[in-house]
Each structure stands twice: as C-alpha cells, then as structure tokens.
Length: 313
Image (tube, rainbow, N blue to C red; front, side, top):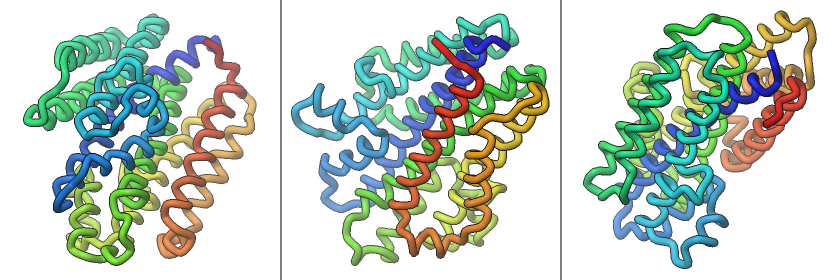
C-alpha cells in the first residue's frame, strides 16, 4: 500500500475517534460540574488542559467561561481538535482514500459531516447539549458499524484500526485525567460521596456505567474504576484493550509485509507493562503521573507508525 493511502486511512479513523472523544470530554466536564456546589467557570480549565488546547484557547478568548470553552471544543474551526474540525478532517481523508473504502463507509462518514455541520451551525444552547453530544456519538458509531460490517480484513483495515485505538487510548487517558488532575483538587474529598459521584460520571461519559456494575457489583471506588478503564482488557475503551488491538493489528501488518519496525516493540512493551502492573502500583505512583507518562509513550508510538510505514501528506 502507498504510504499516502495508509496515512489517509490512519488519520481518517484517528480524527473520527478524536471527534467523538472530545464530545465525551465535554460530557465528562458537564456531568462533573453538576456534582459541584457553586460550580465555577474555572472548572473548564481542566477539560481544556486535558484536551491539550488550553494555551490555544487563551489566544482566542481573553477570559475563561464554561460556555466559551464548550463552544471552542465543539465547533470552533480555529481549534483543529474541535469536534467539527475533526469530523471535517476525517471526511477530507476519507475522500482522499475513497477508492480504498466501501460505499457504506464513505456514505456514513459523509452523512455524519453533513448532520454535524447543520447541528453546529450556531452555538449550541445548554438545554440542547445532551442531544448534540448524543448525535455525535451516534454518527461516529454508524461509521464504525459500516466499516466493521463491510470492509475486507486486509492492510486497509489494520491501518484504520491502529489509528482508532491509538487515539482511543489517548482519549481514555485524558478523560481520566480530567477527573484526577483538576476537578478534584482537594485531597480531603478523596473517597467522599462527591468523589464517588464524579467517578460514576466518568463511567457514564465513556459509556461504561452499566458494564462496570456487572464486573464490580456497583462498588464505585476510585481504585476499581481506574482499574476498569486502565487494566481491564474486556472493557473496549480501556488502555489494556486498546493496546491489545494495536499489537494484534501491527502483527497482521508485519505478517503481510514481512518486516517489523520500532512501533512493534513500543506497542508490545506498553502492553506488557499494562499487563504486569496492578492498580495499586499505579495509584502508588500517582494516577496523574502515570497518565502523563502513558500519553507520552502513546504519542511516540504514533510517530513510529508514521515513520515505519512512510506516511506522508
């Protein structure tokens, strides 16, 4: 496969995943703001920090307000990581590699972009925010469904999946970081009813609330929830699950092309580290510190995939 085609597929699915997860990040911020008495606009500092756009936001807006932060994350085209920018970038990449996609996958992507453009044509009212976030998750889910139901399991599929899971791992880590890095600054509140409600909100924002209750019998402890989202390889948005799939799809590429690259070693080492650690080890290290380290390694993996398979724009 040409590097340009592999690059287009990889980034198409990274952008789709990023767009959905920015929506989930907004959802996490909204849900946790509801659990705070006297919630202030400064709560959104953590959401912007975790999305990696705090400095860019400051360059556009002089003062931080919740409404401006949500709008910047949702629909501001000046923000390359906004939901609107991500879905538009995904569509542009899909159009570039259209001959490598099934008709159903292309149509689902194009229809998602059209619906989103209409919904986000103007600032979304607070009362309409749950519906808008739900629409984003529904549209991106339809793209994935069309892709999984119609695509040949070849290198096209593998590059797409690697892009999906590198992005998914990054965003699950960032959603966890919203909870621990800023939205619960007071150590005294750890283990309180407020702490537990905020952890439950994190589960809802990654569509894991019901499945968590099946595994842990509804015991909403911070250690169990962190364990579920980081180490449980049955949970489809966890870091361990994401890396299991990355290693698997890189393995298929190695078999197809008859060679391995630095990305194979990095992915395998990260998966081995996740499998060898307990949640107590991670909590002892510090959850925020663990997440920061993980994001750095995950970004390095993305660069190694790009270099190894000679991506270019």
